[in-house]
Image (cartoon, rainbow, N blue to C red; front, side, top):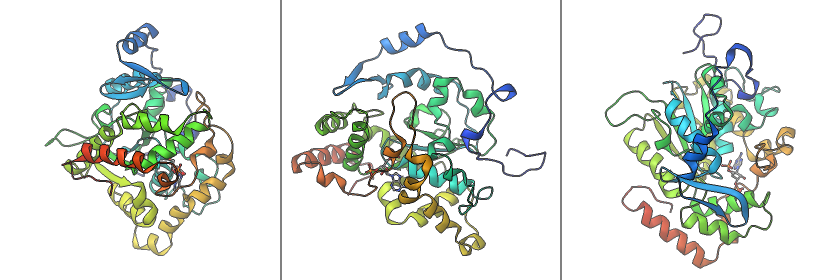
Length: 349
Ligand code: A3P
């Protein structure tokens, strides 16, 4: 555990955006020669998504990653060293990542930042500014900033589990860190993805996003392999992987926050329960609360492709696929999911 001023107190997680990253805190990572990047990517099968002309995906180790994330994925596998106290929030896009990121930050940082505090970091920062996006750090040479973070570190990723070395050790081995995965009913995930993409590519047809989800070539797809990697690990190593569902979170956010807190070794005390800390966290991170914050009404999620932050907060319901898919489409996707998940113990009822 990291220390503050020599005493053994918990000092992390700290809002990532607030961490200085100049001077001694950063170990400068040498730029990898771009020819090496080009060689790595040019050896892979690649495609562009129709209707999203500048979105090139490359199939790296069985997953369709945005081209720019292939070199960082390789670097991550070579250089990321998880600490036992690390907590990694993992997901496919549009499965409730932002919500879980906010809940995880509010839960782990609650002693330094009580949820009701007027100066809570989530009232001035977008949830994604509170956590480092793991693969993003390996793009921008900010790995040193990751190394400098106090424990416990809280991070976020869309990478498949197989690409995060050491997070979940092989059967029988000890160690690893804690991973909290959130999945979502795939039809709703696809609908949410389309709405999000349309904010930058207004002419994108729903059928185009639906097709890439079904044939496995959506970003970070095939979605079934992504989900199954984490699902199987959660069954084999429940002490390392907590598998959550967006729909369960909608049904009972408080109980899932308690599960999360127990999983990371920070269960709520009776006094905290009595003081309404769980309720405070749920309220702070609710869709209406986050959507209403000024910081989430302006700006962009990412500086490369300009998705507005407010697009992260849309409807937040289960079953929205019914207003976008024909019965045939729904049937096709249900069949794919049933086929891919058969015998795994996982289902989307
Ligand atoms: P919809 O587009 O279906 O509304 P991600 O964060 O992985 O990009 O997921 C985005 C989805 O989560 C969106 O779904 C969004 O509305 C929903 N969402 C974001 N914040 C939420 C919150 N606090 N509570 C519930 N849902 C939330």
